[in-house]
Amino acid sequence: MRHLLPTAFLISLCGPCVVLAAQAPAAPSPATEQTQSTPSAIMQPALATVGQTIGMLRPDKWKASDAIRQQTLANIESIHHDLETTLPQLLAAADGAPDSVSQVWPAYRNIEALYDVLLRVAEAGNLTAPSQQNAALERARAALEEGRRTLGDRLTSAALAQEQQVRTLQAAVRAVPPPPAPVACPPPPPVKKHKARKKVVKKPAPAPANAPSSVPASH
Image 1: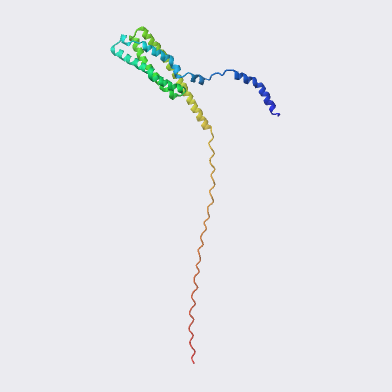
Image 2: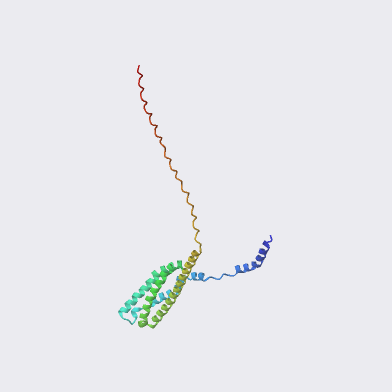
């Protein structure tokens, strides 16, 4: 009973603190905030801008050679196919595990390739496209660059976090003491071999010598 009094006193003092802590909203951790911003949410504004921009381009009206026009049309078709078919599947897989490097990396690599193709279209438009289309291309390029940079930073943070987890696990494994060596059982005592006694064979007694025959007495 004497030991319960200090405990009850501490509970009475800490009770209001516990209630206030329960009522106060918990601040989201960085990991939680990072998980909520999926790769699709990061890239959606930039991808929407790119899609709208390539829809308004008219390379056949540009002051360019036929070769540049054909190449630009092919690049625009490639961008359109990527936005409609390839990239949504990769982003959906990345959204399923947004903190997994192996799941996000294919989408990020595809966005890098998409940026390279869009950059070629923007460079061609900078020389031959009307000013309105050229300005739209530059905005789309800048938006996609910002999106891929944000996703790249996210990917780097996830890789560092996984590396830290591996190091923590390795340190925990090294901290575990090795199991004690098994106690060796003493060997059994050697079995004494009993030497078999040789049977003593008694030699047969020699046969008695024949007694000399008695000579008959003469009469």
